[in-house]
Length: 399
Image 1: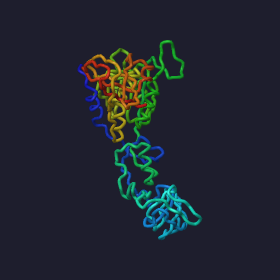
Image 2: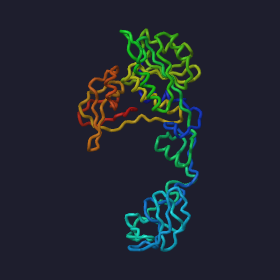
Image 3: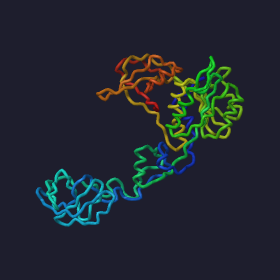
Image 4: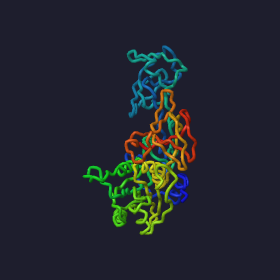
């Protein structure tokens, strides 16, 4: 069977995936959410002419070396000074404070000295004014953040400076995680001599959170259809992610279980390494299901390629799978017929150049290799061998 490419499989998965409903989110909880409505400024920022430095608020016509001005008060941030600066006068002013009426510039304190009730200036007439004009950051009515923008700490600061306590966002999708396999036990449990700990569930839960979703762990299911169907039926979710049980062995029962309840399989493998068994389906009620391979490296590579874009699409956004350029530190053999994402160590030298060293052993079951990697070298199908110094593309995974 000819397998689709990563790009084709991803497009098939995303087709028909639309955003969920909206919810009002407090700014303190909105990091990583996608805006459903724009954020608009309710007033100018700053809302007044503000001092950019500590110094003296004066009239520009009075600024010249050795000018002596009468001190008439002070203006501090957050307070109305209640004064006006007339010709020949100055007011002590602090960073962020409003310029008193009459003043149009600030002489920094390093260019003035106080002499009793007067201040003597040393600033030249063409010195910087050290004033932040009203509205120099943004104006009332200006759209600061468009709908569809994903919030981060920097953008949250912008929304907060516009006075917003909440923002209207797409609802975070609930992502159900279902590990399958008789060999799996939860970390911290007693493991039998032929069992292993479930490494994928906690890793994928963290991945889902970082991608903007809310993970729900349905617990490991046994390798039988009744156990799998009971787990699927046990939770409410917007996207189901199964891990393992997706190959063609006699104990791989997830696909038959999904078909038995009316699920429609749209992708049954992808030409990618690691991760060939990845699959995708719609349940009978239309909810999407992403099936990930059981090996941790395969599961997490496919999470980067497919799960993150699905979580984004459920919130009306997009998660572009992009690579950054890097210089290869050693030779690479020619690639096979599948697109290959090689776990690697990415560094940036003092010269600013990124360099990358693929791990020697790319066995997808090796968790130590995966944990040590901070990049994935992308090799296209049929790519020729490369020598040290060649340019390659590196996907930087969620960390």
